[in-house]
Image (tube, rainbow, N blue to C red; front, side, top):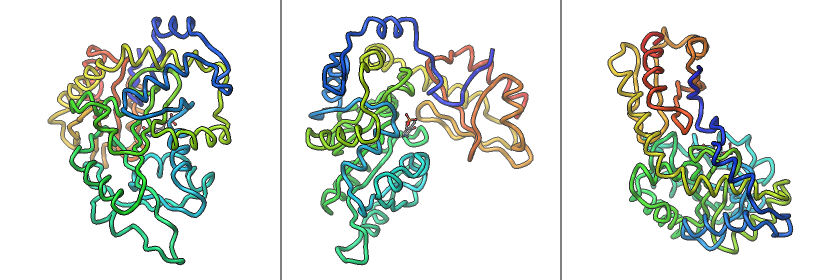
Amino acid sequence: MTIDLRSDTVTKPTAAMRAAMAAAEVGDDVFGDDPTVNALQSRIATMLGKEAALFVPTGTQSNLCALMAHCGRGDEYLVGQMAHTYRWEGGGAAVLGSIQPQPLPQQADGSIALAEIEAAIKPDDAHFARTRLLALENTWGGQILPQPYIEAATALARRKGLATHLDGARLFNAAVASGVPVAEIARPFDSVSVCFSKGLGAPVGSALVGSKEVIARAHRIRKMLGGGLRQAGVLAAAALHALDHHVDRLAEDHANARALAEGLAGLPGVTVAPPQTNILFVDLAPAKAAGVVDRLREAGVLCTGLYRLRFVTHLDVSAADIRRAITVLREHL
Ligand SMILES: *Cc1c(COP(=O)(O)O)cnc(C)c1O
């Protein structure tokens, strides 16, 4: 049996989740008629301490709805050089929103230095795009943004008249690992995006949360982007099931990632970054790196290796799978 550590998006809905999906009450959500979507939106908004929420097919669309709700044509947003909204979303903000990204270098913990943020905010001058928004990401590469940093960066943004958005695709991982409640992490932001389709184990779906006003703008943009779904309650039911049953268990994924890191300790030419949540990065000496993803696949362990080797633990990986993966990895690394 292959052990798939490419991403926490590879999970399959459990039997109980499928039963919840099959039993969902539905309606046409474009008319606002789907009771399960409405229940999910109100539940996630309450959980994150915001007025309103919007269910969307993907995290990419959620982030794009947010960026376009905060920024108009020719506006600019400040974002980390390796942040998902900038690097991994096909340039959607620029292509579809005519929003200019101002990428900034990130420090090892994922934060952008406050001085970099301040220096990147353009003066009100016809030469410059209008800087409108600061976008942060938590977790970033599985790392938890320190809460005091979040407070300081969002306070700086507010002082400068910028809106703030959090890409919280793995917000629940951050909360479970740090003990800081999701509402506390979300509090300083004008909008927050969360994914149900990652560690929470739903097949599809994300939510954007924020004030009624921001979500009303995002709702119009979602329609324009083709994200107005009809009987989406079957999908929202999976997300509700995940919120009921798959949040606390994220601690198991974090323990599995730590076990994997410990199991790889001491191999020559192999540098393992200690994981804070469910994502483990491994750097290999160049001699070991060539073709390694393919060799591991043949040996039954799937991972990704675009910049560094990445192993992600999730609902469908057990502690026994991790022990088996360690044996395979020790042999092939
Ligand atoms: C996965 C991910 C997204 C986007 O999610 P999709 O549903 O794949 O579009 C956004 N941000 C981060 C940090 C992610 O990991």
